[in-house]
Length: 237
Image (cartoon, rainbow, N blue to C red):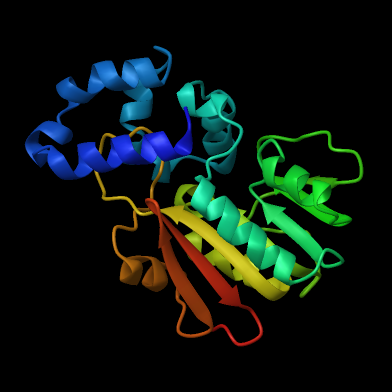
């Protein structure tokens, strides 16, 4: 299902329904049964209750075995975010060295390659892809196997909201990036029963900035239900 559509549905449910209904497990169960194709529904509904007890291998296994409507789409980005990030990377020049962390099926890297970028690397802990001329590394965002400032620009889309140690992951993104870092996360209220396995929620800009520990060197944009941070890594702290 298209991200623009799911963002509109989420906005209506999270803001128009009374919380006593919106976060009622009996109301949400049939919706989540549909969303997860009827697989492991109760276990996934209660993910927020036990994720902190999981080992990395157990955490990874849940995502590897995950089935549902979200797995059918080629990207989690809405069109406004795609256009904004794409322009920011183009401004840095097609000869720049670009890293995407949480690259999924390689949607954005494929787009950049078609625009003339030649030095592209994707990182994902779950998925890999086969794009000729694009490097892929299987790695965890909390432990990126790259040198300091190895990449000119980095993007990390719809990933940090899933990571237990979000501050550590963000510091790794800053460490490997020389110039610009683009981070996208949902602008989403906390509810126990959600159509995703998010463990961090950012209904306000201040919550996101505080979670990452940012003080300066960033610009925040709200684009059709998502936050996009544009971070100047040379002055960010």
